Every structure is written in C-alpha cells, then in structure tokens.
Amino acid sequence: MLVQIMTFSVDYFALAKLNINNFIKQNYSKISAAMMASKILLVSTVFAVIPVAGTAPRETYKTAVKLDTNNSNVLVQNDRQVEITSGVSLADSANKKVSTRVAYRYNEPSGVENYIGLYKAAAAQYGIPWNVLAAVHYVESGASGSTDRSSYAGAQGPMQFMPGTWRAYGVDGNGDGTADVHDVNDAIYGAANLLAAGGAAEGNVDGALFNYNHAQWYVDKVNEVASSIQ
Image (cartoon, rainbow, N blue to C red; front, side, top):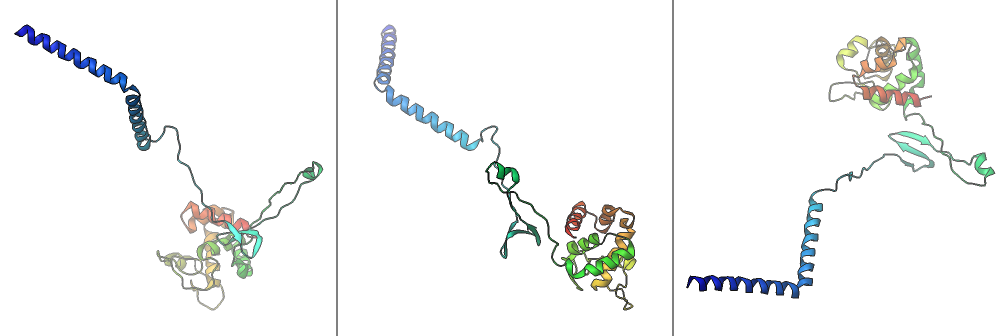
C-alpha cells in the first residue's frame, strides 16, 4: 500500500509538471506580454517616486524690468529708468551684416531732482558727497518732502532718524530756530551731519552708510543709487 501511494504521488506530480509545461508552451506569448507589462508598470512606478539621478530641477528667474509705456526705448525697474539705444557697427556694415548693440544708462531716481540745491548746500557744509546724501534720502523715503512718516521701528521723517540719533545729530537746516525731524530741510542737514560724523567727510562712505543703517544691503543699495545720480 505504501509503495502504491508513493508511486501515485510521483505520477501525480509528474503529470502536473507536464500539464504546467504544456500550458506555458501554449500560452507563452500571452505570459511574456503579461510579464513585460508588469515590468514596465514597476519601472514606471519607481521613476515616478524616485527622480532620475543627475537631473537638476529647472531654475526659473523673475525680473521686474519692463518697458515704459510712455517711451518704447526706456526700461523701468523700481522707479529707475534704463535708456536703450541701438545701432550697427562699421564692421557689420563692411561685412554687410546687420546687428543690434544695446547701450544703457540709469536716469536719476525720481524725486531727488526737487532737492538738488539742498543736497549740495548741506553736503558742502559737512564735506561729504552730495549724491550720497541724495541717495540716502531716496532709499529712506523715496525722496519725500516734509513728512511725519515713521517706520515700525520708530524711525521718523524724510531721512528716517531714530529719536535718539536725531537728538544727537539733528540740525536746524532752515534757520527757523527748531530742529524738526519731520522737516525736509532739517532732516537733510541732520543726515549730512550724521554721515560726516560716521566717516564720510574723511572718505569712508561705506563706513558712514553702515553707521547710518547697520546692514550691508543698505550700503550696497545707497551706493548703487548714488552712482546713478549725476
């Protein structure tokens, strides 16, 4: 009986193996297609989850520069203008080629033209560059006139003085007997006094600007604006 059972088991498994082999042979193309589809699905899933090595994210850049709607040859950025001119070089003409060259210059920041005389008078009195004084006025308040504007930190007036700093460096610029932080004349003379005391009168403009506002971005911004003021 045991021998018969063992023989039956061996025969049964041999038959099952034969049937499986026959099934594979008969359906090979279908099985191969199904396996290929499953592999593709697996690979697609992996790549969807894990980025391909060495592929850097695409960088995008934004710019605030745009054409002035009143002048097609002028670009505008943050209240500053860039004048555009174009032309063809002699070399291009000789070779019968056409190309465009772009030259540019920054126009003065809007507003400072209203106080040129005041900047120059105050700067001359304290021995500092007048265009730096004008740039500070522009960066601090957009070259505003007399104003009671104040910042969240408590800085006041056209040149944005802190109260303690104004008490130390405030000046009666218009001769009315009062040093008023909100008056544009007094404020500009006071700023000239502060910049001179900070080192601008000795040529250390960067040090004076950093003393005015303790931030390197501020120093860079004022210098940038000052360089555009003629």
